[in-house]
Length: 277
Length: 298
Image (cartoon, rainbow over the protein chains, first blue to last red):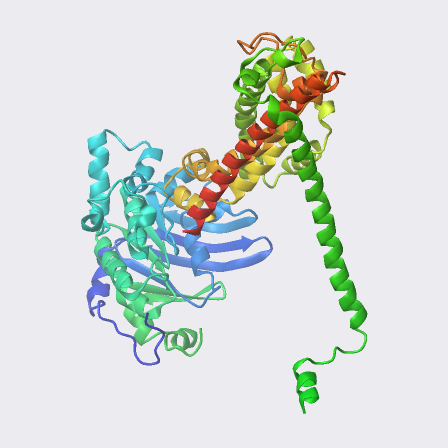
């Protein structure tokens, strides 16, 4: 896997001009305002205000423990299941405050899918993994419909051709990269609007990583993607916007090529050029 | 010189350590001796039971009703009664125990009430079994008018094993990786769906192992069943959960208290059958646990 170099990072997929276009074409999907997050007494996120746009890939970068994963998990209220945590501020997705006490968290998590750092397929068959989200949300329909949704999702995750002959085999028999794509397929099956990815390739080899990155690039046509990564080349390759976090604060947020070529903050520049982190 | 070489290869212990090393070796020997003592006692017990009872073991012994003549007596009703009572005990203890453990582990983990219940469950596990017998007599036999039935016996034994089932189920639930729960929640599953479809299936072998080990303790219980009034002489088979019954330990107890040596042989033979039943239950539990461990390792 590539490590942080000292030279100028490659920007192979971010062609100049694309991002400017994006700004006009892509409305704000997720609007976060003055978000504070606490683990017990400890404040893990400080005053985060950020607008994430629809149908683009936004990357969160920063050193370990900077709060980027914690922030990602506030976007589908995954932190709710950790006891002793507290949130202040607002997160609006399509204008709806997701921390409104009247909001249905289960419905939110269906609309905001998540892929984890370590692939976590269920110890069931490949089909059952993909069908699970449909079943629990009452979207399964007839057997034929279900089979079709499973196939669509596996195709969307670029996994169909590799597994179509063994759909009833255990998902645990797949390779690491295939398992992670299965987790993506599983998330896509319930047709979310937003896909959150927490270092989805950090446990994978370079080839599997490339598969995932190509997949992310394809998926942004249909989904709003937010990805946490501590691999800066990966952020530069796959994302349109990049946010740099440091010690629980959002230091800088801009189009990816600006973050990597002409950051406004000295701290960002030091980080992306590998002077620390 | 050679003396020097030996001295160099085997360095002289530092002064003051000799006593500590002697103590170290001594402690090891004492520990080994106590272990041998315990094993010898067990071996003697098994040997004497086998020597006394092996001669009485036969198909007739397993399938005959009790009799005043020792040579004609068998354990058929007691064997069927034991299996019936234990199966029913499991059927009662499993759902109740699992539900209680799920509440404590998944829902109430951090509430004060849950912590209070938790401490008391640990205490309940240490309560002498005869106390459960008294409770069963008062509650099931009299208050709920179950009489001295299989159901009353199984309910009493279920209460007895419940703390153990709850504790082992909690262990099994705790061993389910958190990533599995997160994956389920992230797809929009509710807590109940996550528990039912993901957590319980993964925890099931562990839960069953705990249940079987708890039941293999219950199958040897005599005191609580005598307390609730299980019969000692049963010349018929229990045909429903309402019917009177006896179990192997009670049959054994009955025979041991007779003066004739022939009945002592019967008692020894009944003990062999009980031990065989118990060991095969434990074997199933170990097999289940091994399967889980192998699956986790791969």
